[in-house]
Image (tube, rainbow, N blue to C red; front, side, top):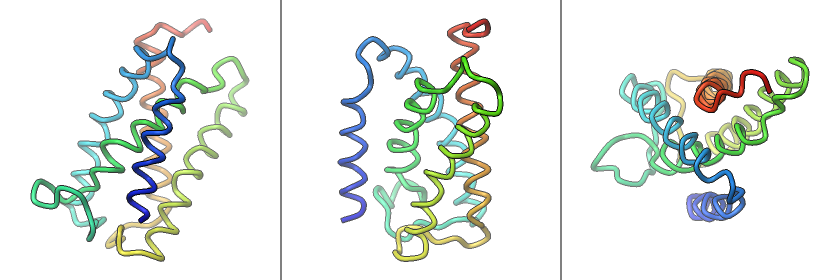
Length: 150
């Protein structure tokens, strides 16, 4: 049921992407997809995290829903609503809170279900990797669309 709910949330979120930002959203999605594809596979192949219940289990050992759909879609909203015109403490707080908002459900799911199993992993590794990949995606988005002076 959790997986079905997360699929529904993912596809509902797609409807809330502003139409005038679809080109930018596509770029953000693809860039984050590239990043999470590599890092997601790396974490499962190094046996840091295990996904006992997963889609396409015969293809790879990572979570298709999270790595290839949900997280890249959430990255779109992170970048589109990033407070680029605010001072750096507000931007840092945005990164911290957005990452915490993604890490907390993961920790709850890991503790209470069999969808994720931390082997040699801690919640703060998730928070740190989410923070870094979101910020990397924001930097790429900023560079690609030349948002340096805005």
